[in-house]
Length: 203
Ligand code: GRF
Image (cartoon, rainbow, N blue to C red; front, side, top):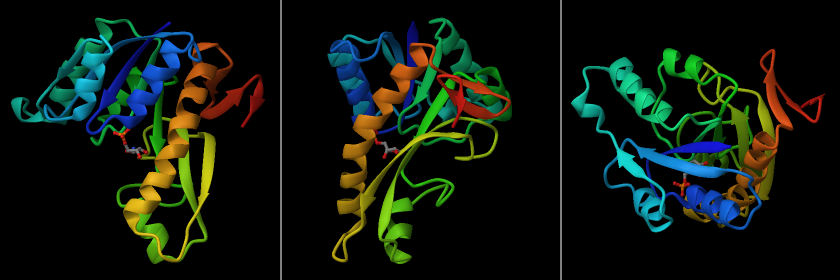
């Protein structure tokens, strides 16, 4: 199986996927990594691992649709079975989401449906939540709204900064994202009628 990963930033989740593939915990190859930011450290992680890595600059395109079309053409050259968003901080056009329906995953740093969108860690602190976490979900048209596959929870402590919390959440992300990806590539996880189905059971 072939996986393409989209990134925008540090790429710690990409690294977790690279490690899991190298260790045989994911039965697939990471075929390529694409970034919408040339400065993303994730690109270096990909290069170090010998994975083709490329950035596309949104400013070179007329609009979101044009950018996403060019990105999709580059992605499809690798004929991926799965597209993994790993800290990809760009809204996807409806056509892009449709093109990869049922084969695109995202990880979002909150216990969805709580806190879609940005600044989730600060929101959890501001609301004095006692727990926070992260969710892996299929990508559908609604931003951070697709069916949740797996979540991991972490405690929120009184003295936590958003950064403390982000670090605690990311440690969990690095465990659950490779796991969910392995389920997908092993054919155990599918999207059916807008529901995530694992081993034949609706989640
Ligand atoms: C992760 O916390 C992920 O949940 C969110 O963006 C962050 C990306 O971190 N979507 P990294 O680039 O994988 O280190």
